[in-house]
Image (tube, rainbow, N blue to C red):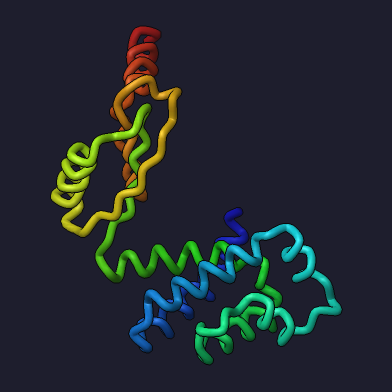
Amino acid sequence: MSQALTLARPYARAAFAVARDEGKFAAWSDALGLSARIAADPRVAALLLNPELDDAGAVALLSSEGAGESYARFLGLVAENRRLPQLPEIAALYEELRADAERVVKATVTSAAALPAGELDAIKAALKQRFGREVEVATAIDDSLIGGAVIDAGDVVIDGSLKGKLARLQTALAN
């Protein structure tokens, strides 16, 4: 995985630079996301490794009509360098660069049950105050947490779940 990220990083930075220069962060996000989802399909991934598929065919397969000429050139460069299988990693790294440039923190709140909108708003406000940035919150449900929630915001993980508290208590008692 780390090798794939290392290979993808320069392409993500290049895509970000072009999107920034064009002022089209969202359009590039959409195009990269679509290309990444297509490239991640096992049937397409096998096709991309086929030496009979030329670069133009690969670009046509992975590009959407409204993506633009600069995106098609970018995909052509990625295809020419045989890095199309890294498109999912390129897209993920691009999204990180975009979020950083737009001063947005993406957080995932995982709870044992669905959280009411009021609680999500309170969590979002607390995270906004902590990070000093806008916060985009996604939710997930994990029954094994028993209660509480785990907040994953990039490099910061806040475990307020009962499962986590019980694990910490067990560790403390064992020591």
